[in-house]
Image (cartoon, rainbow, N blue to C red; front, side, top):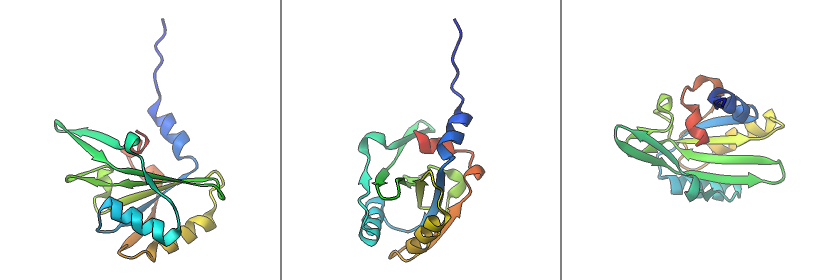
Length: 145
């Protein structure tokens, strides 16, 4: 009987094909950050308790909260990940990033992303917003769990 092997690289490539990722520095708790975002944008991000990201490291499990919002008008899905949990990082290569905002939109509208980045910089307590290159992260599969 033939074994089926999941090609994680292909899964990541397919997932990130229409996705863009913002790195955000904001020294507040995840629930406060999402509250600030919801108030500023009029969005309705919700905690996805059944899909928290769990990472096993050094005999300990770390849980990273995941928030989701589906924007009907632009057919875009938004995910906010906390990059820190009890001293560990979801994406260790981004140690100075508190939150990750992943936008999945088939149209890849550059104007929308530019406007989103500009508005993110206006959110109270946000210190830095960077549009990241998806190809630079070796641990990006952790965003898919």
